[in-house]
Image 1 (tube, rainbow over the protein chains, first blue to last red):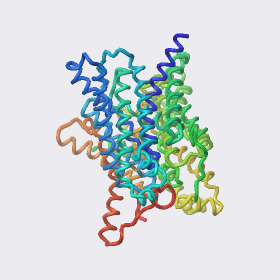
Image 2: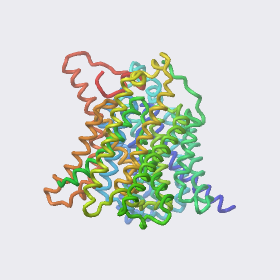
Image 3: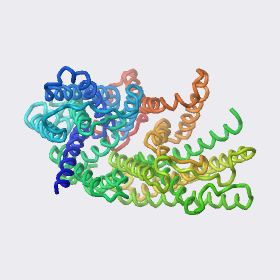
Length: 293
Length: 337
């Protein structure tokens, strides 16, 4: 029983990371209707920024671990957010108004480019993440971070003028423009926020799993995108639920699969994800939409 | 470059062309598949399983010295290619059923995940060699000694011949009523549906035919290189095929020329340019290949858009606004409206 509980806690922390990444996908998809493939690389970049900050500051700030982790997360969030805004400016903005698939191609190019620049700059091998002597376990930290981020985002979207602007642009960009909203600014903000949470997720990933490498973003990114879809695009609660469900399912699978099948965990998870995508393309909380001609 | 090396590269080009041509057809039917390399891998690994079943004594016991064995080998090769194509087609039929309601980005992700499933099963299945890949014997001609040239001619003829057949078939399809259907779907799926075309059925048909082509190409590729590893059909390699379609101008026939261009320039840079600086050919370019790939993909999509806007501004016409939330219709393609 204790083992089962352990596995559920593992799954919850993994699900938190997935949900944090999925937020960025969902926000960008909600506003621009395209799959921001480079988001997984933003996540990786955040993880590496956190790695370097922790390395630099841990000799000096070793006595106050919360401040240390907080600073690392802030730096990672800001850096990853800035990267996301840059990517938007140079790879997506020229394609404003083109179909999602065209922008998706550009995003795939950015993803491959960033991943391999990372390999050249940082080498492809896996690095150990610096450990921090926190009074709580990294998995508990992941849960706390997730709850904080969701509260922050919830307040931002539902209680502030900027959140209203975001919702307006997501609903109808042209009408929002007529109301005096500058869509370019709102879109840049959406990218920044998505990148910010992905960067924090990167640090949490490093702290929980203890190892990072430049290509680590691909799988979490793919899974997070499907979470964003299954959790119904634009619904914070749905994203939260779907992420946590996948995390728990994945960790239960790796715990209870017979040893002959345990190597196939990823194919099984992906098959489940495709099944979810096929079963509920409008999301667990969404209603089927009618496409108007 | 020796004559043999030229043949070898031509055969590679043949594989690439088969993949690009078939993917182009799929994109034309407005199915934006990102997982075409998955069918390629599926075909290659079907052939591996066939070889394991056909030669239970182990691959080392096989040799091509006796003429009778060459005929058996040829039969085995044909069987592998057919099985690879058939399995890929079967899976594509299933996927067509399942993914019928997924469109655009969702379909793209679903197919990409499918390819990743194929790759990660192959990488973990010990029966077919796991991550190290699987080596099959030379079935018809061996690459040793005098037979090397024969081997090169055989595969070049086979692959380019198949390409010729594929090209001919595509031409025939385009001339037929199905070609008109595909063009109608390409222009506007909703209008096509309203004119009585069963869009989903047409898309499924195209998808299955293309998957079959890719699957057979995979099986052939295995017997040509005699080695397949799961990374052969990882996502960056799949992107090379997509790049062929994109550089050709999204869903245009020029993809064939584009693929040829990518492939040959890649080989020339690898051998000639880096050879000049004394690098071991292939070592350096293999490192930077993906970086180049990413840059080319970004620029091949964004530059036409930037150029198009600059042209409009220069002509003094009022800046045209494209539909802001484009999704369907003609606004969706990169080529100028």
